[in-house]
Image 1: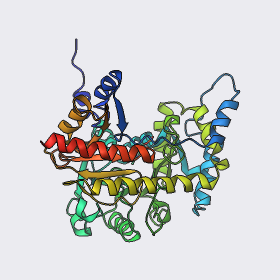
Image 2: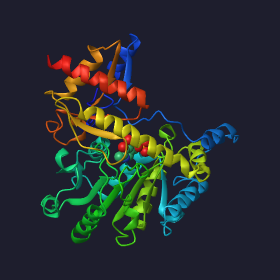
Image 3: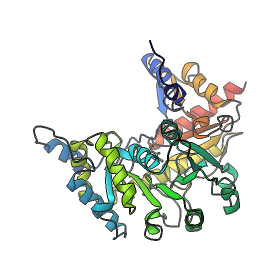
Image 4: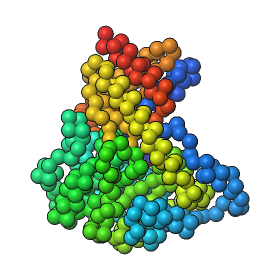
Length: 398
Ligand SMILES: Cc1ncc(COP(=O)(O)O)c(C=O)c1O
């Protein structure tokens, strides 16, 4: 048999999903696992969306237009108008199969193989997989737990720009750090991309979930200032707890990026028409839905942050948004520790599942002693998870 492609063999496996067989095995043996490893919240999807799904009566279930159904795009337009971005309209919104496809499309649109994209490290692990699929080199810009993972200076960022650099990609609020960037930081990126003529790809799938006194600064605020350079990557997965419906979109005023991404969309014919029908109901979701979620995540953040801060040797910085926290643990290898938690450690026949930090770094050595924790469980389970983690760390280190 011919060999498989090198790129297939080199594709990284998500550090998050890699441990799933171990958790499945533990569950089979009756162990209760608190999942802090994945951004899959336990909260309900808006009822209007579930009701709509139950009323679906179109037969056959046909293809949708490649760039999204008219209703879905119209609903997204309304959503952006409600946020105050009146210039956004259905002509510059492209429906995608969730944010994941949006990331792939945006990367594919702006880079050739061998090109470089700057990303703030630690970064969302799928950026690495997508970049590798397209032959793009991710160039990490280091940030640190001590500065709350905020951006370094303009000079530091600029030293990493080469003739091959095509874009800066960032998530705001950030997965995995929970950092919400200030107006000055977003302005810094605008200045850099203007000066060096780069694209700016802003992933804002956690837009609604911030816990700071300042507003979230969307790239949409600057999109008309850099119309050829800006691309927004968006998703309904987290906003409406619709992770399994696979709904997202791009917004760009660059018509070449838009038509290129549409060609990409045509190659997969269609997104899910039933999904988009559900997504179009967003106009009927009361504002209180995301407001309540924001409050819920904020109180979960407080529990997790306070709990972790009390564990001897654990270093954390208070997340400002999303529902993740990066924690430095007093261990020498977070993956070994995560495996041990699933295979060996039990407290009352319960354990926790963590995402080893290396998956969020370009150089795995850097995140070796860190884990990413998703505080997506209800309060009593979060409290119990922190308790288990503390007991486990004590035992592991003895
Ligand atoms: C920062 C960020 N961007 C994009 C995504 C993609 O999510 P989805 O494909 O469900 O929209 C995620 C998912 O966790 C994420 O954390």
